[in-house]
Length: 91
Image (cartoon, rainbow, N blue to C red):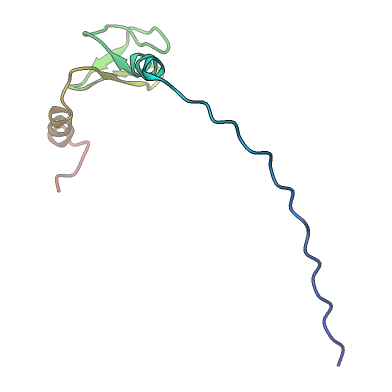
């Protein structure tokens, strides 16, 4: 019987260490401003379409599919709306 040759182990290259960038509160506020909409907009923030539907906590663009969160809208009302409209199964 012949002995099986040992598999050669390839040496993996180690990636250079990543730089850590610290974000202050001003960066967090800028990110939040991009994510949430204030008031009741009538246009899509992504494609500027007027073909939008308003849900209790979101603006839903029917052209590009973007869901934009409204700032002060409670998510509990959104959940009830989804259950009542048949988009979710009540659990």
